[in-house]
Image (cartoon, rainbow, N blue to C red; front, top):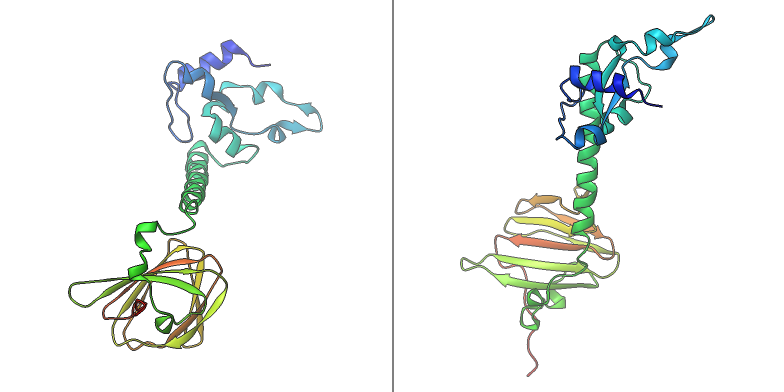
Length: 228
């Protein structure tokens, strides 16, 4: 059971600030999210003669920590408080970045298709202009002759090797497209991009459900011709 008077004394001494990450709470959060941490874990005070309670609970071995840092530190041992602060702060920030990346990827995956206004039938790419079988694409023209194309791979397929007389830039919106250049496989995953210089022979493989956006420095695709 927590010693309220002891905890209050340690909190006040440390100015209600986590000694690891520097987090400071407001009047309410101080008591809800701060704990008193034992810098040296219990294993350091165990001996054949028993457990040294007085040293374990001594003020010199106690310091204020936020809940996250306290859980991250657990029973890890450090040479001194400064080393512990640097290491645990890196661990906490690394974990936070990992969660941010996970949720960002989850948010990107909530759309499984391009919006309808980007898929107007008048801009649909003709099958003869597709290097990958079973894909659906739409194209938009730039005033200077460049093009932007949006492709959706309905099923896993292989792209025929080809080269362009102009540069190509691509970004994968969802899924994965593996470029094959000079026998080297280059996976390009959701959120990643790649630049292909003109004259470069390249093929690839796309996983079913993959969506990509391409920019071409020249006229790459022809549209489906209207009937009649």
